[in-house]
Length: 247
Image 1 (spheres, rainbow, N blue to C red):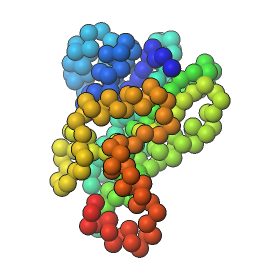
Image 2: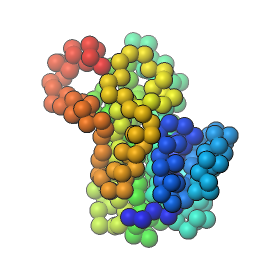
Image 3: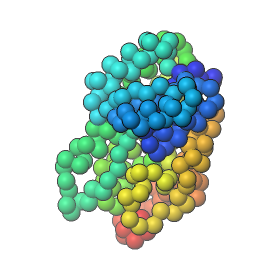
Image 4: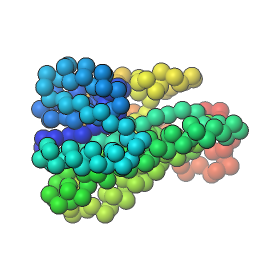
């Protein structure tokens, strides 16, 4: 598919910013959405004209839906929508903090779903388009101290899978991306080992290529993906004993 207009959320930093630059460098008009206007303006100046800032807070789903629907009309149709905006944070079972969990659900679940749903009806009408969600390898199993994050990313992955099945034959593609550790603002706060951590620009390049190929799913780096996918077959009793030691 040749993309003319793309919307990428969470584009003020990290993977979203790098992915917006990656597509803009290839001639795609990228609508870079995030809350921090000053960072989006800096990104626009670096892009030499192919990036348009869109100030948006995906945790406000009704506003997000209306803004994307309006943008879709004004630009002549979005060919690509990437629900990348997300947040992390520890949620330890013994000391649950509901406000933190609620905020993560607002962004990673409700915000991502609203982003994907906004342009979908008209993509179906046009018989073309591509929906992409950035999940995480934390979605493969419930990671220790990450109940809310793992669950929110698992929701996105399952949501995309069902959409992919439903949209078969419509001309609309669906891709779910599962990144491992990438050097971003989020991972800068992580204390502990981060195996096979990647530079942001390298990760964005892999993601962009997977999107262009139209992959149904793409997980990277492969070493971590193999290990975590394999852990899904472990009996629960064994996983419960091993996970706190190695994850």
